[in-house]
Image 1: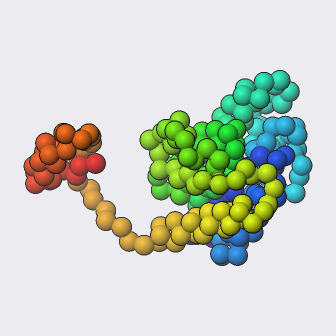
Image 2: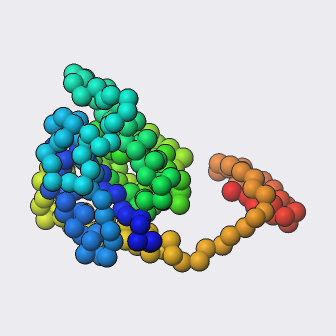
Length: 216
């Protein structure tokens, strides 16, 4: 990880500030540089404070509708603002990894933003929604969901353990990025298979690879 790049730890600090700060502290103990981000909407543009990035820093343009009465609309609006903000920081070369913490709303918020970044950026969300149908969160990205096991409503022996492991997983992904990986300039072709089509697709893949293609 280059000195200018940091792990962005994102949560809604009105309900998860303690967990956010704990996860950030564990990452720092593992030698990573961290930016703590409050993406909450319930406490207005300045949130409860005490973090590197406040909601007002994210939702800058166009003017953010802070007083939306509908929670779903507020989360959607902040998710779009967070997405744009993270993309700008990524394009500026500042983002090394993304760690999110959330229940249902926080998982929607973080996943909507995290999945906009490329697969070169490690992404992990500790989520109470990780044991259900996760297609709506992960989509076609490389986002990793880690089960929270308990509601993220204050630190306890279980949540502290899960968050520590999440920090360790993020540190592992960061360090793995420094390892050499195979690189190819061959033309790419995409293939898909399901059950009974596997033998056919496998044979087709072998023929394509023999002709100089790389098959995904």
